[in-house]
Image (spheres, rainbow, N blue to C red):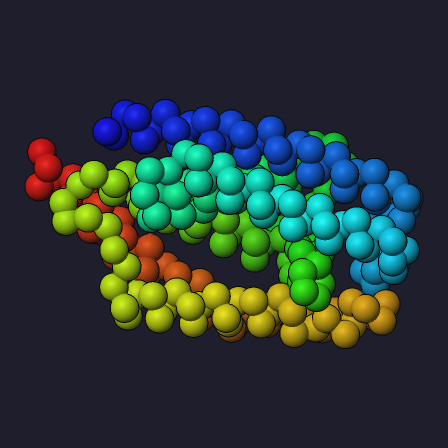
Length: 220
Protein backbone atom coordinates (compact mmCIF):
# COMPACT_ATOMS: atom_id res chain seq x y z
CA UNK A 1 0.00 0.00 0.00
CA UNK A 2 2.78 2.42 0.91
CA UNK A 3 4.71 1.77 -2.31
CA UNK A 4 1.56 2.21 -4.38
CA UNK A 5 0.83 5.51 -2.64
CA UNK A 6 4.43 6.63 -3.17
CA UNK A 7 4.13 5.95 -6.91
CA UNK A 8 0.93 7.97 -7.09
CA UNK A 9 2.53 10.82 -5.17
CA UNK A 10 5.39 10.76 -7.68
CA UNK A 11 3.12 10.93 -10.72
CA UNK A 12 0.89 13.62 -9.20
CA UNK A 13 4.06 15.64 -8.54
CA UNK A 14 5.25 15.10 -12.14
CA UNK A 15 1.92 16.40 -13.43
CA UNK A 16 2.11 19.42 -11.12
CA UNK A 17 5.66 20.29 -12.19
CA UNK A 18 4.69 20.10 -15.87
CA UNK A 19 1.47 22.03 -15.30
CA UNK A 20 3.45 24.73 -13.51
CA UNK A 21 5.41 25.32 -16.74
CA UNK A 22 2.14 25.96 -18.57
CA UNK A 23 0.99 28.42 -15.89
CA UNK A 24 4.34 30.20 -15.82
CA UNK A 25 4.38 30.48 -19.61
CA UNK A 26 1.02 32.28 -19.57
CA UNK A 27 2.38 34.75 -17.01
CA UNK A 28 5.48 35.31 -19.14
CA UNK A 29 3.26 36.40 -22.04
CA UNK A 30 1.02 38.56 -19.84
CA UNK A 31 3.99 40.37 -18.34
CA UNK A 32 5.43 40.96 -21.80
CA UNK A 33 2.16 42.73 -22.66
CA UNK A 34 1.45 44.64 -19.44
CA UNK A 35 4.90 44.95 -17.83
CA UNK A 36 7.50 45.15 -20.62
CA UNK A 37 9.91 46.92 -18.22
CA UNK A 38 9.43 44.43 -15.42
CA UNK A 39 6.67 43.41 -13.02
CA UNK A 40 6.26 45.98 -10.26
CA UNK A 41 3.60 47.50 -8.03
CA UNK A 42 1.43 49.55 -8.43
CA UNK A 43 -0.19 47.24 -10.92
CA UNK A 44 -1.15 48.08 -14.47
CA UNK A 45 -4.88 47.40 -14.78
CA UNK A 46 -5.65 44.64 -17.25
CA UNK A 47 -8.22 44.86 -19.99
CA UNK A 48 -11.49 43.55 -18.53
CA UNK A 49 -11.71 40.92 -21.27
CA UNK A 50 -8.32 39.61 -20.18
CA UNK A 51 -9.44 39.67 -16.57
CA UNK A 52 -12.36 37.44 -17.51
CA UNK A 53 -10.06 35.03 -19.33
CA UNK A 54 -7.62 34.97 -16.41
CA UNK A 55 -10.41 34.32 -13.94
CA UNK A 56 -11.65 31.42 -16.06
CA UNK A 57 -8.09 30.07 -16.33
CA UNK A 58 -7.63 30.16 -12.57
CA UNK A 59 -10.93 28.39 -12.03
CA UNK A 60 -9.95 25.76 -14.60
CA UNK A 61 -6.61 25.29 -12.83
CA UNK A 62 -8.34 24.43 -9.57
CA UNK A 63 -10.70 22.05 -11.38
CA UNK A 64 -7.77 20.27 -13.05
CA UNK A 65 -5.86 19.88 -9.78
CA UNK A 66 -9.02 18.64 -8.06
CA UNK A 67 -9.58 16.09 -10.85
CA UNK A 68 -6.04 14.78 -10.43
CA UNK A 69 -6.66 14.34 -6.71
CA UNK A 70 -9.95 12.55 -7.34
CA UNK A 71 -8.41 10.19 -9.90
CA UNK A 72 -5.32 9.43 -7.79
CA UNK A 73 -7.08 8.87 -4.46
CA UNK A 74 -9.21 5.97 -3.30
CA UNK A 75 -11.01 7.61 -0.39
CA UNK A 76 -12.27 11.07 0.48
CA UNK A 77 -9.27 11.91 2.63
CA UNK A 78 -6.74 10.42 0.24
CA UNK A 79 -8.21 12.44 -2.64
CA UNK A 80 -7.88 15.53 -0.48
CA UNK A 81 -4.27 14.63 0.24
CA UNK A 82 -3.41 14.18 -3.43
CA UNK A 83 -5.08 17.50 -4.23
CA UNK A 84 -2.95 19.21 -1.58
CA UNK A 85 0.20 17.58 -2.98
CA UNK A 86 -0.64 18.61 -6.53
CA UNK A 87 -1.52 22.15 -5.54
CA UNK A 88 1.60 22.61 -3.42
CA UNK A 89 4.04 21.22 -5.98
CA UNK A 90 2.37 23.23 -8.75
CA UNK A 91 2.63 26.47 -6.73
CA UNK A 92 6.24 25.96 -5.69
CA UNK A 93 7.39 25.07 -9.19
CA UNK A 94 5.35 27.91 -10.70
CA UNK A 95 7.65 30.35 -8.93
CA UNK A 96 10.69 28.25 -9.77
CA UNK A 97 9.85 28.35 -13.48
CA UNK A 98 9.23 32.11 -13.33
CA UNK A 99 12.67 32.48 -11.77
CA UNK A 100 14.16 30.47 -14.63
CA UNK A 101 12.18 32.21 -17.39
CA UNK A 102 12.18 35.80 -16.09
CA UNK A 103 14.70 35.84 -13.24
CA UNK A 104 11.76 36.80 -11.02
CA UNK A 105 11.18 37.04 -8.10
CA UNK A 106 14.41 38.70 -7.06
CA UNK A 107 13.64 37.67 -3.48
CA UNK A 108 10.88 36.00 -1.48
CA UNK A 109 9.80 39.46 -0.34
CA UNK A 110 8.73 40.56 -3.83
CA UNK A 111 4.98 41.12 -4.09
CA UNK A 112 2.78 39.09 -6.40
CA UNK A 113 -0.86 38.73 -7.42
CA UNK A 114 -1.79 35.27 -6.19
CA UNK A 115 -5.36 34.86 -7.33
CA UNK A 116 -8.28 36.84 -8.76
CA UNK A 117 -11.28 34.91 -7.38
CA UNK A 118 -13.40 36.53 -6.00
CA UNK A 119 -11.10 39.57 -5.63
CA UNK A 120 -7.35 40.00 -6.22
CA UNK A 121 -5.13 38.34 -3.61
CA UNK A 122 -1.71 39.94 -3.09
CA UNK A 123 1.22 39.18 -0.82
CA UNK A 124 4.99 38.72 -0.83
CA UNK A 125 6.03 35.50 -2.58
CA UNK A 126 7.23 34.17 0.77
CA UNK A 127 3.65 33.67 2.01
CA UNK A 128 2.31 31.28 -0.65
CA UNK A 129 5.62 29.43 -0.75
CA UNK A 130 5.54 28.68 2.98
CA UNK A 131 1.90 27.66 2.77
CA UNK A 132 2.67 25.29 -0.09
CA UNK A 133 5.43 23.60 1.90
CA UNK A 134 2.98 22.97 4.75
CA UNK A 135 0.28 21.73 2.36
CA UNK A 136 2.76 19.38 0.69
CA UNK A 137 3.76 17.79 3.98
CA UNK A 138 0.14 17.57 5.13
CA UNK A 139 -0.92 16.00 1.83
CA UNK A 140 1.83 13.38 2.01
CA UNK A 141 0.90 12.55 5.62
CA UNK A 142 -2.77 12.13 4.70
CA UNK A 143 -2.06 9.95 1.66
CA UNK A 144 0.40 7.69 3.49
CA UNK A 145 -2.10 7.28 6.33
CA UNK A 146 -4.48 5.46 3.98
CA UNK A 147 -4.95 1.82 4.90
CA UNK A 148 -3.44 2.19 8.36
CA UNK A 149 -5.17 1.79 11.72
CA UNK A 150 -6.75 3.75 13.14
CA UNK A 151 -7.97 5.33 9.86
CA UNK A 152 -7.15 8.96 9.25
CA UNK A 153 -9.48 11.60 10.62
CA UNK A 154 -9.19 15.23 11.58
CA UNK A 155 -10.17 15.92 15.17
CA UNK A 156 -12.72 18.70 15.69
CA UNK A 157 -10.22 21.03 17.34
CA UNK A 158 -7.74 20.44 14.51
CA UNK A 159 -10.47 21.29 12.01
CA UNK A 160 -11.28 24.50 13.90
CA UNK A 161 -7.60 25.46 14.03
CA UNK A 162 -7.25 24.79 10.29
CA UNK A 163 -10.30 26.87 9.40
CA UNK A 164 -9.21 29.72 11.69
CA UNK A 165 -5.71 29.70 10.20
CA UNK A 166 -7.13 29.74 6.67
CA UNK A 167 -9.39 32.69 7.45
CA UNK A 168 -6.51 34.67 8.98
CA UNK A 169 -4.20 34.03 6.05
CA UNK A 170 -6.83 34.74 3.42
CA UNK A 171 -7.56 38.03 5.19
CA UNK A 172 -3.91 39.05 4.83
CA UNK A 173 -4.15 38.31 1.09
CA UNK A 174 -7.38 40.20 0.45
CA UNK A 175 -7.32 43.02 3.01
CA UNK A 176 -5.66 45.47 0.62
CA UNK A 177 -7.67 44.73 -2.52
CA UNK A 178 -8.68 48.39 -2.91
CA UNK A 179 -5.08 49.45 -3.47
CA UNK A 180 -4.66 46.78 -6.12
CA UNK A 181 -7.78 47.82 -8.01
CA UNK A 182 -6.94 51.54 -7.86
CA UNK A 183 -3.32 51.32 -8.95
CA UNK A 184 -1.82 52.17 -5.56
CA UNK A 185 1.12 50.68 -3.71
CA UNK A 186 0.09 47.94 -1.26
CA UNK A 187 0.07 48.55 2.45
CA UNK A 188 2.75 46.73 4.51
CA UNK A 189 1.96 43.05 4.66
CA UNK A 190 0.41 41.78 7.90
CA UNK A 191 3.16 39.34 8.86
CA UNK A 192 1.87 39.11 12.44
CA UNK A 193 -1.51 37.71 11.41
CA UNK A 194 0.11 35.53 8.77
CA UNK A 195 2.51 34.12 11.37
CA UNK A 196 -0.39 33.34 13.69
CA UNK A 197 -2.13 31.44 10.91
CA UNK A 198 1.03 29.57 9.99
CA UNK A 199 1.59 28.66 13.65
CA UNK A 200 -1.89 27.09 13.77
CA UNK A 201 -1.16 25.22 10.53
CA UNK A 202 2.14 24.08 11.98
CA UNK A 203 0.56 22.68 15.14
CA UNK A 204 -1.98 20.68 13.13
CA UNK A 205 0.75 19.46 10.77
CA UNK A 206 2.94 18.27 13.65
CA UNK A 207 0.00 16.36 15.08
CA UNK A 208 -0.64 14.73 11.70
CA UNK A 209 3.00 13.69 11.35
CA UNK A 210 3.05 12.32 14.89
CA UNK A 211 -0.05 10.22 14.25
CA UNK A 212 1.45 8.95 11.00
CA UNK A 213 4.61 7.95 12.82
CA UNK A 214 2.64 6.17 15.56
CA UNK A 215 0.47 4.22 13.09
CA UNK A 216 3.60 3.30 11.14
CA UNK A 217 5.18 1.77 14.24
CA UNK A 218 1.99 -0.07 15.18
CA UNK A 219 1.67 -1.51 11.66
CA UNK A 220 5.25 -2.69 11.82
